[in-house]
Length: 65
Image (cartoon, rainbow, N blue to C red; front, side):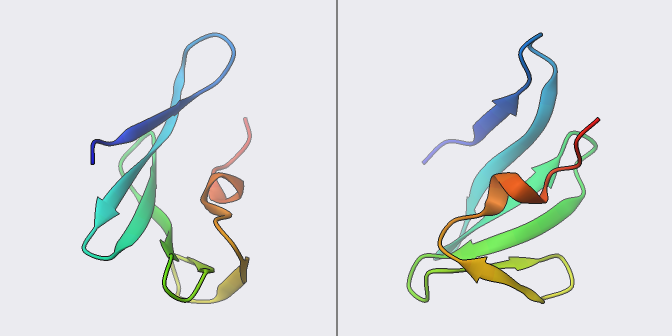
């Protein structure tokens, strides 16, 4: 599976979601990991490992600017 780019309305890259083994990770535009989603557990966690919530909430972890 290829990386999924997330862009704002003007086309500026906000981040990328990419597969990482059985999980998915989201990185911001500078390449820093913001969190992971585990489809087997249906949980999203932030970069510190804290539970964000159930379901794929990766896009909510990107900073809004």
